[in-house]
Picture 1 (cartoon, rainbow, N blue to C red):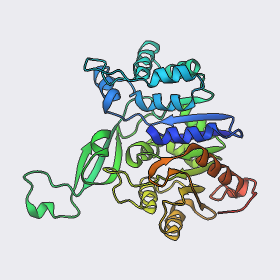
Picture 2 (cartoon, rainbow, N blue to C red):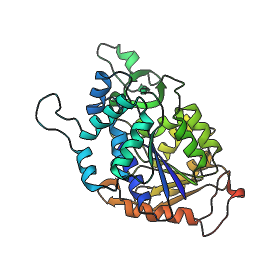
Picture 3 (cartoon, helix red, strand yellow):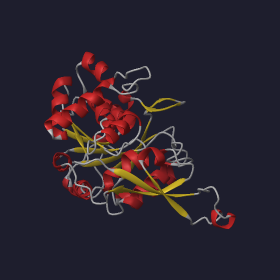
Picture 4 (tube, rainbow, N blue to C red):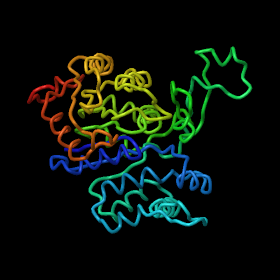
Length: 337
């Protein structure tokens, strides 16, 4: 089975860790967001113009690596207070490879070989991107009180770090440039996949951006793969404060209303009212789509997916009826949850 996981950061790493534990998955491709502008990645972007931010790409490589010694090295961050302080070794190596080879995909393939990765790590776009969000609920200093009270008033916030930490409510995000060129190999991987996973992760800055790349969104629409949305375990301060599971789905559907998924996978302990989630899921899955609830959290107070539990839940999803728009063309077995 060929699996493609789309996302970024720790959420994508958890998904990749689960896929590694599934012997039925023989080929794994990670498609990674490229809009990070903070930390080591942000510094590299500012100092070397035109370079893809390497941080999320490095984390995906580490999640799939089979060479423990090299993995530990690429994840190591320099300490101290000098010019290298805070930089991860893998970020610098990736930046060097991208600059010398002149091709980010070639650089990532070289890192995959070095780390013994069984699979592939690809950027979602061939160029670095910026995220811009429409945010409501802000009260800029000096704004008239009547204007501040206007519930319909929104402001534009630019940059992944700024969007992720805004005190307002994110209503919608867009990418800059607005029609970014998708990574050709990522598009091909989605089209050829048997299983496509979107999420978990920072919803507005790591998950939804994949749906805003036209060629990638088209591939997600047209693929014959089983398409699964993996929901977050808890609201995320800044991006999704107080968001319920169904609100996560609602904003996903608002950003890509024509896109249909087959299964929504959520942690059973994180869904307070399952019927509400199922009702919202109907709007983005069509006839036959289903919600699958399973215990996938690392612990009751830990908002992190446990790879072994997530792998078990994905096996249950794969053994059940496909559902969704492509159900008529796929074999059915097992029972729905």
